[in-house]
Image (cartoon, rainbow, N blue to C red; front, side):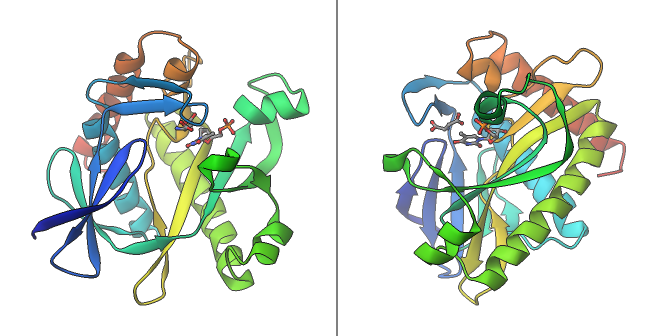
Length: 242
Ligand code: TMP
Ligand code: ASP
């Protein structure tokens, strides 16, 4: 598979064309940003960890019937994926109040929610990804009703699968962000990444944060947190349970 010209560079990844018009190559960077790019830095080794963790999660989800863009891991940082048109909606799933939800609703961080919360944000950096609801989605034509219903159903199912998986490695899945895309043949698939950049992971026993909040909030031990998540994931997968 030939890596051709770059089609996109985001805050954490670059995307390249290939000689197959239905496939792209994603290249993960160590760059980290927060607060819509206001805070910038690097997290050594993050690209490789996020690539591997994302691919591992995508394969787990595929096994449970969730269609994803994943095709094949090519190297430490590069993965072959289906070419998609990203649906410009960030889907956030929350089990425990944290981050912007805790702030917006005045809930103490760590308050377990009585039921799962699903939120949508309009993916637009210039506007700071404002929160929207399904009416805005339809009014702006961001997705059809059929697509959004599928997005919601997949997201709740992904939450169940991932909550159980992370629990097995001693991690409480607090919340996470998903993005979906439409392939050239019109199929809705899970895209983007699933990593400590896009999820909140708290150690079940100690409550220690093992995700990008360590970078966002200057808590120190950022690289160590990413490495710890990778170590647990690898140990679990080596156990043959994947
Ligand atoms: P929030 O509490 O800041 O709204 O974040 C909710 C979840 O979404 C959290 O797991 C981090 C993730 N997230 C992203 O992946 N990208 C973003 O740009 C933001 C704001 C959050
Ligand atoms: N990466 C996002 C940004 O820079 C935000 C975040 O993950 O906190 O906007």
